[in-house]
Image (cartoon, rainbow, N blue to C red; front, side, top):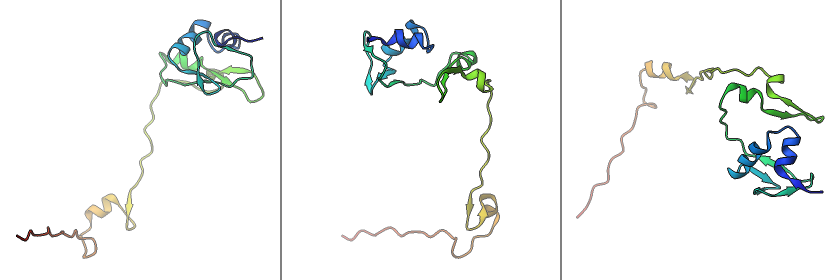
Length: 126
């Protein structure tokens, strides 16, 4: 028997019925690739997709987001990962040109093959 999307997702622990209704109104929920509408019903064989916003109101919201396990079942992200507010700088990458780093290249004297060449502008003929 077909049931409303929000009832099925709430029963599976993916949020309250009201939260699922909010996702539907925002156009973030899709059933089999089609944007869901309030009142849509599913039978359980459909593929349901939630488009993430990437925005969480708090770290606790992120910890309490659910993760589907491959063997079945659902766990909270905070139960399987260390979730905290932090920032980590990406590693610095070196830029190399002709076997030299960018800073080494700036210190070297230009040679004939590395000197910039000037292009001549075409002259107009009247």
